[in-house]
Image (tube, rainbow, N blue to C red; front, side, top):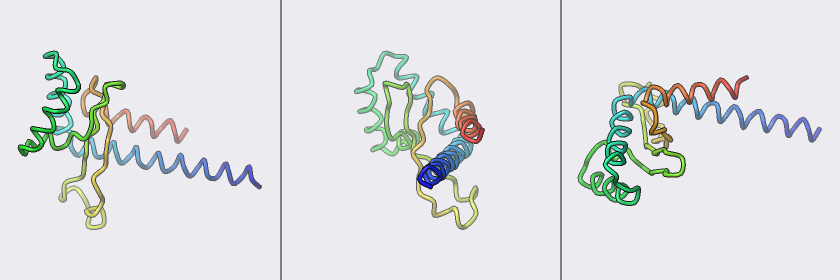
Length: 130
């Protein structure tokens, strides 16, 4: 009985993770241009030799000034070459029930474009399902 309950809990956890990854993939797709621009901007600064701490300050300052791309950047993950973006669907993209969905933090790989980041989340979903 305990083994069955543990297995059910594990299946539920995997299903929840699968749903989150599917949502993240859809969010990236809904924001392709913004995600690509965020990747481009961060990679541009890094290519100029700007260190991650300075980049963090630049992003904060640009967000304060109202830069929409900088405002999406929630975090920088030097150890995994990723940035965390705060993404949401545009109101015209959603039905009424989904419009109240909160902003979702999505980790994005700086080594690939937005489309490939979305595909990675879809592939992860397939792995969990298999």
